[in-house]
Image 1 (cartoon, one colour):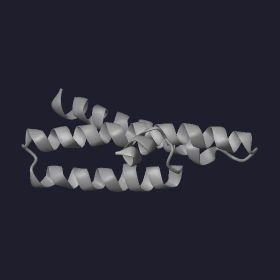
Image 2 (cartoon, helix red, strand yellow):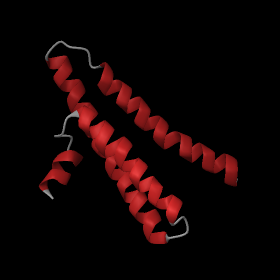
Image 3 (cartoon, rainbow, N blue to C red):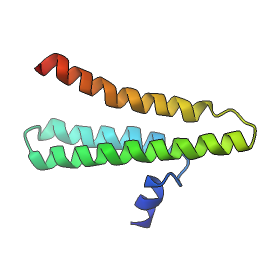
Image 4 (tube, rainbow, N blue to C red):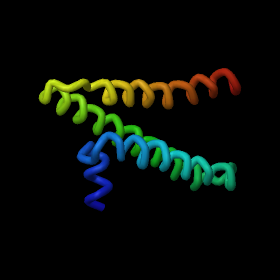
Length: 101
């Protein structure tokens, strides 16, 4: 449980949080939806994990940017991951309105 809280607070490296928690984790939970698309429980698990992974990555990006600025290094990857997170959230919402409304 402590590991999950540490990841959520951004105390995990940006690379591990982005690739393992965000990308790989969402691919795995997204695959569950392919097997049981009508299951409310599966959709709830995916939604909760979706929020957890994106907030965790956002927090890790924020800490990465602060650390890079403190060390006079480029914070590029921190900003890039935040842009990707915004796009990952925005695009499905836009598709919902285009498809269903």
